[in-house]
Length: 316
Image 1: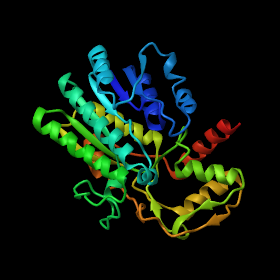
Image 2: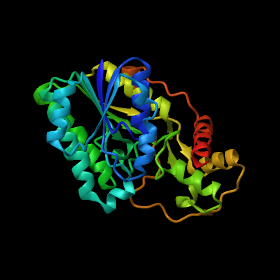
Image 3: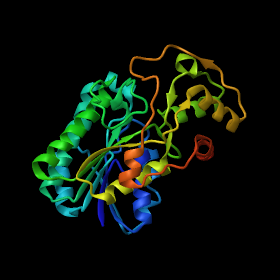
């Protein structure tokens, strides 16, 4: 099976690439190595993949329709796992036009090309942020999800809707996966696990909103990748599916996990919760379990132990 992975040099993307190669698939990776965070780190993420004869890399921006068309024409992928995006809720408030260009227009390019080239299955990474500050707990896919709190989740909801259009008009099979607070080795430096671990390691203050009362459904990268691969294999007609751990963690307790692992006491400042952030995220994963056999097993304590070990190695 030949699978095209966009954003394959990123955090989730590189782990997905490695898992596909490990099971024997042929992987075509597309990434533009932008400078949202270190391009060098992204290249390092692919160090293992580059040793495989079943791996090919195209350094292309998904906004470049002509270049992407050439990739599809040359590679003829059987399936697409679309992970490329401008990520980050708060950053999207500062650069909404960029987020629209990359996330919406880039996804539209890929849907158009996947349809034109007869792709069997299109897996789209969406986000739990589309639920906004929903009071329906846990979050279920049947919710309308029409009240996002920032441009990033709004663009992701738009992508889900566009995917449905291509399913309706052209029969493109698509699974839109709403990912919940993914963490683990290779995690992005703008994400909470990395920022808190780095701050504690360096003796700096951490910002813990609303006295640490918010809750997040932290989901370990290996569990997420299993769900992504299961969705790629399932060839569902059109489904929106939560991939989370379904065990929300109070943020002050999350900091405590890191304190224990680093044997350091956090110095905390606690401003109010920003308007971009919901008080809780909590995935109902019954649909993922039923359709994909999804069963996350990694606790936050276990996952953060792996992350901290990776961070220490990276920090030297």
